Length: 111
Length: 116
Image (cartoon, rainbow over all chains, first blue to last red; front, side):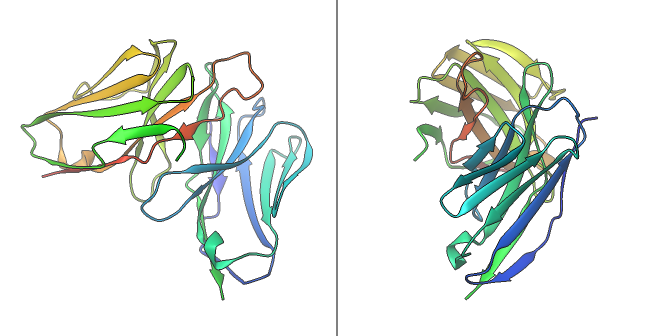
């Protein structure tokens, strides 16, 4: 059973701090990794995708991938209250490349 | 707006009713998906369609019946549901295989389903 694990949180950080969200996955041959943000009562919104080892930066967001450790993370710099949401990690797995989602980490950014 | 629309946004139905959920994508994608999202559980993939062909049925009960008449439209037909089927049903779409953005999935707003 392929799995994606995330700490459910809540993760609470003060405004302006760096929020660090972590995700591990079990399928060693996974190739594509995604972070989605989901506000309460809304659908998931794709915010980052990463395919190679290392860091990928987009604005205040940095995704980090370490395939050897089967670990992917999302850093949010200068966290804002509007970043308060649940962050879903998704990993491409299966013969058709379908996504497997973690349960999500709830982030709370306190003003 | 992600370019994926779903109707209705909210649905309340009895266990003996028949209803349908509709999804439409305006992104030119070739793959469409149905997911179920219940409280405290990860997103569960239900069905996958690639180029209108169903390629995956994730052991979904037969009371859920998908239909994909073309690559832009996807339906989920519901009948004799159970209260435990109450959940958020999400439609997503993605670009076909062979492109660099394969499997970047974009979600619609979802249908909040309540089964009484």
